[in-house]
Length: 115
Length: 115
Image (tube, rainbow over all chains, first blue to last red; front, side, top):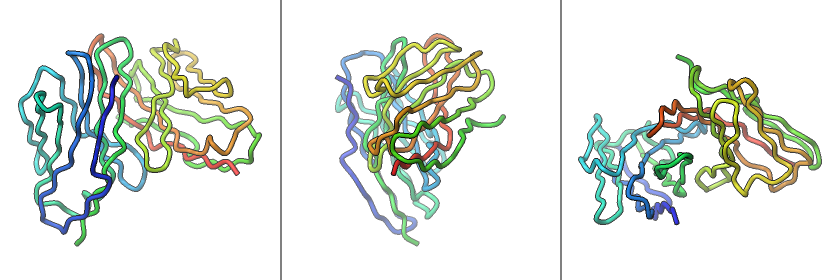
């Protein structure tokens, strides 16, 4: 069965601290896709990254970086030098290769960045 | 390029009433998804369309729910005889599917409160 676990319900950091959001997934497929979305208080889910199961290279985009490890079924997200504007709920999601690429979401991690 | 739009953004209704939500996808996106998100949870898949065809419905979508996407453009989600348990955020997403991987872009959601 497909499942995404975000064990951290809430994280609070002070501005400029680095923070890592954990994501562990379960799937029986060999081809699958992993995503991170940001949901600010306004409610709209903002796409951050998509990674397919064949690409284990870590990715960096500005202050954001992602660590994909198939051996531990994890796809962790690190924000370097956090800012108040990073405060939001972050969701990790999984979709399996097939006709329907519906997203299976974790329960999200609420990140609060204090000034 | 405008993003996904949803209307209304908020809806308050009394139990037993019917409600209809609209979603306008990103132009030329051929897939449109509906998700439901309750407080403290990640979005859950409800149904999706490829062009005008509704290809999959979740078992979460009871008989009181119906979705359409006439002409393969905008979509509507109707809930008949609303119940308090229908209170949630209803999210729409669209994507351009070319046969393999895709990225879903979300609208701002419609927040429904059933009294």
